[in-house]
Image 1 (spheres, rainbow, N blue to C red):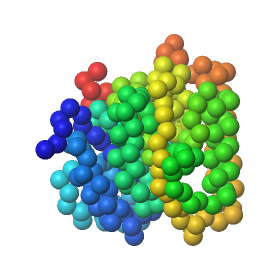
Image 2: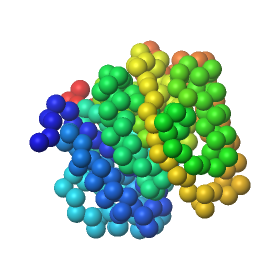
Image 3: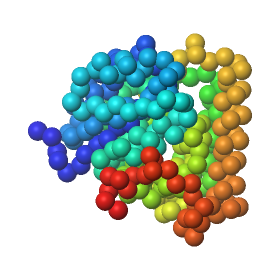
Length: 267
């Protein structure tokens, strides 16, 4: 018997995952069948013209699965925000596709959310109970993001970059209309803005992650580091210098109806 007090939405951003996405979604669904809440899975294909991920997902017959996509790639942050706008849950999580993150981590972040009565739980590679294997370039990105998030953005967590997080719906309703980052620093921006708006109960949970080394080249690693740094500096500039995220600057926010959660809240 499921507990009807809460409903969980899980978003999976998908980019070039045609070989693994079917099994990935089935694994996630098997995990969610074990939790005590009703749930939905929101699959978002970030560029349906790039490969066959969208058509592969369409072959899956799961009653709780909803599939969305758009033709051109816009970045992971855009895909997650797009999926968030389609949810109906009062708890909203996202997890990376690619089968690198153990989907049982969804249960962990959910339990931590309830235990701490948190606004946000982030899965953290630096949590003492985490089991992780990932390359030096990713460690550099993670450490750099930690320094930026703590000292420039005021976020007091050790790891902002792991691809698993869960939010209470009111956090996202307030935060999403203000966001701009579409790619690597999306996680930093959403946490920084949430913290600024008073959603300060942000805590960490363990994660089990095995990174796919074969997909990473030296050039790709340097590109990720550079892009993450530049996007993070842009968040800092908007947060601390321009005060762009403040309510008084609402007229400056870039409105996109596809990313508007109010369509599902009646607000």
